[in-house]
Amino acid sequence: MRSGVIAQKLGMTRIFTDSGVHVPVTVLKVDCCEVIAHRTMEKNGYTALQVGVGLAKVKNVSKAQRGNFAIAKVEPKQKLAEFRVDDKGMIPVGAEITADHFVVGQFVDVSGITTG
Image (spheres, one colour):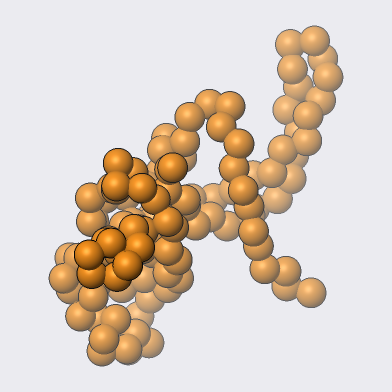
């Protein structure tokens, strides 16, 4: 199982195939998405990666979270999420996840929050 990524939707567009058929696509922005921590079976009872995205001001981050970011040696992040993975899918703490993390043709599950 592969890790997820936090992205921002920029909009919709379309691409054309070689036969001239257009396919609607969603444009996502993946910006500075880093692994913050590991959740292990021994310590937490499940295996997961904690991923953070965006930059947050230090004054807006709790002291407990500041400690977690200091341990990981990364800048404070605005949004955090956990993605369950198996032991083989662990990515080192501090590593940046980009769009290259996904393989061509891979299906993805997307969830979002509406602004309306």
